[in-house]
Structure formats: structure tokens, C-alpha cells
Image 1 (tube, helix red, strand yellow):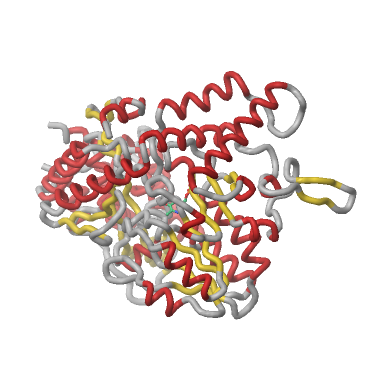
Image 2: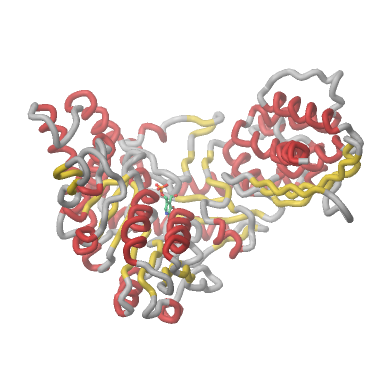
Length: 407
Length: 144
Ligand SMILES: Cc1ncc(COP(=O)(O)O)c(C=O)c1O
């Protein structure tokens, strides 16, 4: 994989920030976009823009073909059986909320259980808290090991006959933990439960085969995988989606509308009320083309090397704490002794290095780590070992700066 | 040195308040308690104030956060102690103006150490850190 050639396809990376070449280490928050994606969105607006699924004119047909073509690309990307199972949404958050509002409200009653983990992003916690409150179901957590992983024994011990939904993240956005989804899905099914996977940090980095994983729902966001913001995907097994009520009602999603009653379109459109995210979907399709061309295996291998190198280099810094397991996805969450992560991030920014600092939308996990905030460097296909060297250099300067009392 | 632009943000006085905060802890006895956090980054503060006859008799804080939020809390509690509530609120407004980069009347407000936080206005991402304690104080006196 030729990283410098890849990097050239990301115009935003070719700039100086605060007088230094930009080192972008915040792809877990959102990834940068290659020219092909920017152009796909641009060309759509320049040449094809029109509403979809309505009207007879040529632009309408072109827009519809591109929009539905993007759905087919997503289907292939995650190896779903049918495009009926691919619902475009605003992102992971909206996708999870759709399942929590529709499936969960219809299928849970008092005494039932929803099982999640303490490493979830807020968007895979709060929808379940709300669903539990609305239905009288109980929310349960699979405990974490000291290194921030979960064991299948604990999954088995937590998931019971009363469990109706298991919702877990594919990859933790803080710890980098990669969860054994296929095995967890099996345990969920043995107990008669369905499994929803938060794939926000999975799909951008790991080959996803929803049929092989046998997950009931898989959710992800386009903006973390080189696509535009505002587009994401809810994959659901057809048998579930068929039985679920839509959560948004209006145009696009209807079959017949009478004065007092209406019927819904078939899948997937019954879940896509209103004018859909046409440009976003087309941009996501281009992002999928881009990732497939580079090769998902190549990307993963590259990220793995970056993560290993980053761990090795960061460990050489005195007073460095790294959170999460040894075997991890392409991100490192850390703290420097006696320097608050906001301060670390501000100093790094003055050297053009972008990292995330804060609670990473995972307050329960921060509590478990016994910290109020952390810093995080996350990697993608355009990052290099030199980026990590810059990070280490910046961190040494941060330490010096704070250690000497800003002198 | 490249760190120079940082020096407008991180001043020695800030470091002193961060490392050795004033008024950190709890007030014994009757006091109003305000909890406030910055949900985007996780900084949190618990501010306690004793107000008698419209005067801030005592103020203490506890919490977790970066050098900017914690030093600002230290300076704020120091500044409002002994002040009339209305003057404390005026000062808070002046502080907000300072964060927006506006000139403020240093004759009217004896800012002392607080002036060291002026550089925060050049770092938009950090302004909320600096204003957290002041917002907590305003919330407290408004609810009182
Ligand atoms: C693990 C995880 N889940 C969910 C989300 C939410 O994604 P979005 O904000 O795109 O809906 C994120 C994004 O930060 C994430 O990292």
C-alpha cells in the first residue's frame, strides 16, 4: 500500500496548521475525505441533482439510479443478502435509535432484559436506557476485564432467557477493543435474543460480513469511513425489518394514504420518510469504491502496524498511561501524568497535531477507567509512522512545558 | 520557539493557581451548592457559596478539569469573596466580554490575576473551560 499516493488523494491533509504541517490523528471522530468522494458529491449537485423516486424526468431517473446504486454498494460492502435490508439513516446514532424506538418498544415488556457493555458510546447506551424506561425492561451490563475486554464466559453469564436484545460495539472508540461479535451473536441467539452491533468504529476498518457474523442489526456512519457527514446505514435482517413499524412518517415511505389510515412502502423505503440523504448516499458509495480499491485487508494491516508502532513509541515517554488492551484497533487513548488532556491537546494543536481530548462520548467508561477525560490519537489509511513521531515529539514538548511551569 | 504562541494562553499565574488552587474544598455549614459540567469535554465543578445580606461571605470549589478551568475557578472564588452579589455578577459579565476579546474597564473591575486568562480568548476551543466556574456562580446567585 502506497501511503504517500493515498495521502495525496486527501486535499485537506496538504496544509499547515499553526505553522506546522497538519498531522491529523482524529479519524475516529471523523475521517478525512478523498477527492473521489468530494467529486462524487460535487458532480451529483452539478449534473444530476433532482428528487428521487418521483417524477418522470431524466434527472429524476439519474438521481434515483445513483441513490439506489449506492445502496447496492453498501449491500456488497457488508455482504447483506438484499438491498431491502439496507436502510439509509443519518448515522450510527439515528440507526440505533430506529431499532430502539421501533423493535425494542414493540418487543420488550417488564421483566425482559437488554444487555450492553460499559465500553459503549453514549449512542449505544441512552437509546436502551430510554427503551428500558418505556417498557419496564431491565438494562444489564457485561462486566469489563481489567484490560478493557469482555470474556465470552461473562457474556454467557449475563445473557439469559429473559434477554431480548444484546447491543455491543464492534470496536471501542476509546479502548480500541475489538469484540468477538460472531461468538456474542451465537450466545444471544441461543438465548432467544437479537444482537445489534454498533459498527461506527468497525465498518471503516474491518471487513464486515453481516451474514457470517449473523448479527440481526449492524449500524455505521459514512463520515468515519471517508464518506460525507449526515449519512449512515442501518442493516437489519429482513425478517425483523418486515415486522417493525417505521419511526418517521411522511412522504416517500407510504404506499396508500387515506383520510384516516395509511399503508407503508415495502423495504427498505418504509424506513426512509421524507426526501432522503441523496448526495450523502452517493458520497458514501464513492467512499466504499475507494476503500475497496485500496483494499480493506491492506488498510487493516497498515493501521495495525501504526497502532503497534504508536504503543511502542508512546511507552518510551515517562509518565505515560495507555488505556485498553494490547491487541487493539488503530487508536491509542492515553494520559500524561500531571497534564490534563485538554492542555495536552492544545499544546499538540500548536504543533499542527490534531488529537481528541475529553470523555469521547463514553462517560460510563471514563468512570470505569477512573479518569475524567483522556487524550486519543486515532489512525487511518493516510497516517504514517512520521505522524506518530511528530506526536511523540509533541508530547515530550508538552511534558517539558508543563513540567517547567511554562518556561 | 514554537511554543511562543502558547505563552499567551498558559501564563505563570495560571500554573500557580492550577498547582496550588485557592479555596479548594468544601464549606462547613450552610452553603448553596452548584454542580456544573461542560458536557462536551467532561470538566466538572462543584461550587459552594455562602451569601449573607447580599454579600458573598465565602466561596469554595471542587472538581476536575484542565489547567484553564481549575485555575479560573480558583481565581473566581478569590475574586468574589467579600463582594456584593451584584458586583460579582457584573464581574462575570466582564469576564465573558474578556473571553470574547472585548476590551474591559479595568478601572471598574480589579481583575488582578484574572487578567492572565485574557489569552484564552485567542483559543476559542478553550473559552468554555475558562467560563465554567463563572457560569456556576451566576447560576447559584440567580437561583438564590
Ligand atoms: C463507537 C461509536 N458509536 C457510535 C458513534 C456515533 O456515531 P455518529 O455520531 O456518526 O452517529 C461513534 C462516533 O463517535 C462511535 O465512535
